[in-house]
Length: 234
Image (cartoon, rainbow, N blue to C red; front, side):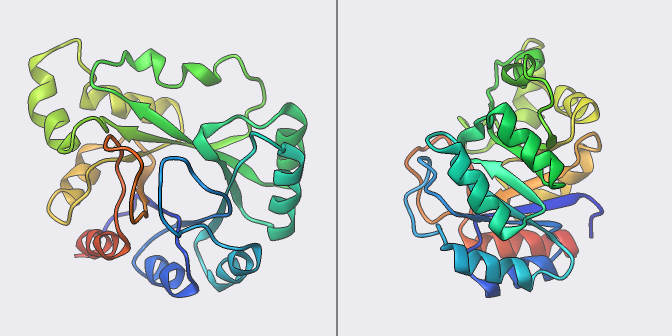
């Protein structure tokens, strides 16, 4: 069992949403628009998204939208669903007016699509947001060392051999400085250790997908994610 925040992205049915909530997810997200990183059928209609949102009894509802081409339309669609949080696809920053409208409605923003490479300086990780005032950032979501299939094991065992590499301590400090959830190569065997070793971060993020358009990306098929969630409860 963990008291860390668990975020599960891209559920595509009420059954999936209810199941991951019962297994401890505190944030449950749906995708209303295509994410260029994935090639699957996990985008849901507005009607289904609304039904999924209503099915949640405890978890906060997150809606993933594309703010890049028509931010006003994205805002309109978000407002109709009344989510707790919105998550712009690819980590795009919505225009000032859109951020202000979301803030006024009590809707925070999750900035995802952040990637931390093994040779990144910690000061670079969130630097793209440094010059933007009033981000309305409820959460930042980072995929850690996605270039390595065994990202957690590399960070734990190999990175310490090179002091200039990104380290576990750097991730914990980022989490102390910013509300952060992290994604790794989660498995039932390593997820407990990951959570225990990262007290500085807010929690973990599991992104559901069936296929990806890139190899340097962490995602889980639904059945694998359920196994990871079960392991956290044991």
